[in-house]
Image 1 (spheres, rainbow, N blue to C red):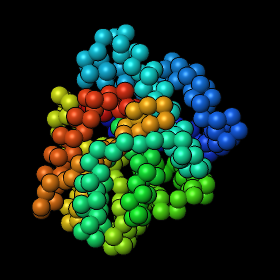
Image 2: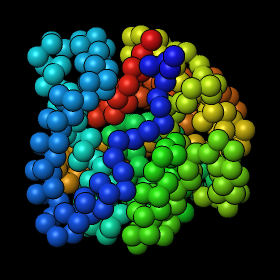
Image 3: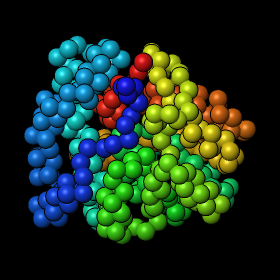
Image 4: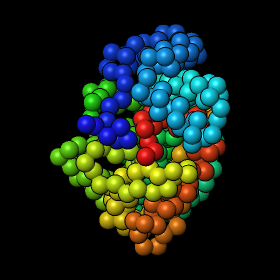
Length: 290
């Protein structure tokens, strides 16, 4: 029987859905497409029972909201999640100008880039961590984002074919570990590699930690990679703070030896603070806590 705490590696939607969104974005506009999402979010609230159950546990037990407030928060979370997907697609098809960003701690990235080494950016499925890669292109360093979603490689290729900013690259997680070769190449080329540290596939190495008041499992792989390459790293988050606005946060990894334990400790500390500030943008829609 499958462990419900393990993410199954699949993201809802497909190539046709993305193409429909792209059509609406180009022909009708982003604002009207947001309007359609209001109904889509309601559909998922009612019919996506497994993720709704996990979300209810999150808001009711972890965030300690009332039952009614939890249901309202689930709907708002679905709506925000849909918006972040649309935003990602909109940026990929050339609508980056529609968005504005504020940066907190951007100087931390500049500091590590001055060292002329490869850089790891460690994030989570909180906010729109993928879209951060598009906005990082202003750093004048190629950006690689490692995506753990084997199901939609064709979708990502399609989005990259639309992408005008060619410094943005996708490295797709693979069971044959070919993604490690791509990561190694990027680091040797002194590029930026973005990882997430909050999801794992069943069978992969994990570590159980106290997170937001309860036990939860985290993947060891991303933290071991940073330890292996011994290059600078930062914890980063991209949070949707307005209709067409994002706040980008970067925190320098303060660890001279890049020890796995210290990397994880710093990550959990930052992630908890961001989670408490932006709980409706926690997009791990499965039973995350034990």
